[in-house]
Image 1 (cartoon, rainbow, N blue to C red):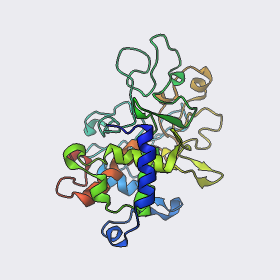
Image 2 (cartoon, rainbow, N blue to C red):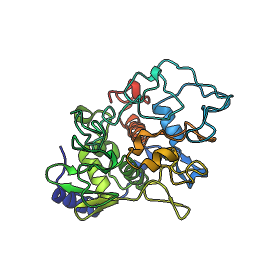
Image 3 (cartoon, one colour):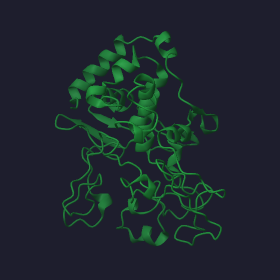
Image 4 (cartoon, rainbow, N blue to C red):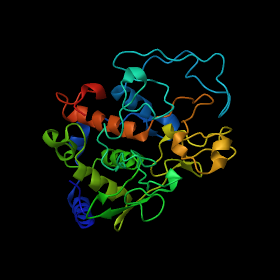
Length: 318
């Protein structure tokens, strides 16, 4: 179920006007762990590690290349798989959905991400991605995403689909902001209904939060998850590790995807086919924001419904 644009406007208007802060209810829930070295943003590493515990990281860190498109450094050591845990060295979504022992993490579909709107598998270019391409499409990146008709970093709200495709860092920021604001009368009672939504936040509540922080008339408009003029954007998420120097100095990277110069200059290869950061000290540290979203939802749900929503994602009904 999704809310129409008119319903979203009405609900957000009502909720903002009637909900008052309740310090007693706030005190019952934990504060989100903070990383003081990251502008006081949430400590995403610890939140993710609780939901998706990882194999031991090699002493020298994750394997890395000497440059984008280069060669593997000779002292690189790959981590050893451990039962019930996840690969700490994350380079690609190519193995998403596989058993964690094979390096897989859950896909956005697995985590019930409601704004994915993935294309069907009909053997067209980009099938299964958020780009809906014709069968003769050449550049997947130029194919439309559902509801993205209002320009870049913007999604429309329609009666047919509600909020269109938005990246997971948008609801991630909305949940963080709303939880920290402590304006909900009872987060546990309002956000969760286990019988219909399990340990996920109810879609209608998530719609309201996204619109509260990013809604503009009948659209959802947002910034990219980066630093802007040295300060966090409204959706900043450090674990994207996008555009790091010197790996991306030649304009070859596509967001968090580290493409070689040859690939970038070809101009028709979808950037998402390129791996995440795989050079330098941050090699393998990328984490997709849908995982952070799933981890944060479960972190809150574990406080609200501890008997049904355990800390680890693999043990949860999600």
